[in-house]
Image (cartoon, rainbow, N blue to C red; front, side, top):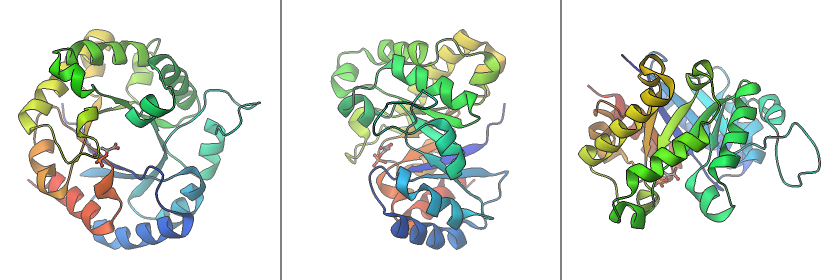
Length: 256
Ligand code: PEP
């Protein structure tokens, strides 16, 4: 089954509205040659930068996502943002369960699942992050951890809903550290994730789900990683913050 490559930039808590607009304006001409059939390009700015980036990306092949969403429609949830608010701001995608949210903000598989259901109900396209800590990999528990995150995070989804979800496999020890999983190591894990999705949702759905790799993906290693059978793109932190490096990474990732 052929799956369209998806490269998403997670800007984290970087870029004001003016800086985000400038980054997208610089990126647009650099990626204008990437045909929509070849790859989906997504940038995920902070909430307050969303509207400016949506405006700057209008009419281009760059899509926009948010970095989190709350599960409630509205109410007394100080500091939170609803799916309807993201839709109104022009977001198409939303990152859920990033390891930084799990590590610093108490995110669990259960809260990821609630956010995921709210995002899907609102018509957002979720990118659900999973990944093991260094001690979990070293302790031989990678598969157990990923299976738990998949079963918990995706609990109760129908096959149709699952077909609208992207999974981002991000080994936590590789995020922002410069340490990348080797393409072979990443592929083994992506294959495990694919098999788990097939078990949970059936082959017809599981084989169609796109699984991104994330963790120090750079222009230099993107091609080899995305060439792997079960690696369908990347979720990019550091290398997405400059137009030149993000464009080079995208071009390398889709180079034959
Ligand atoms: C991320 O935070 O999702 C990420 C992959 O970061 P980096 O590319 O900087 O490792």
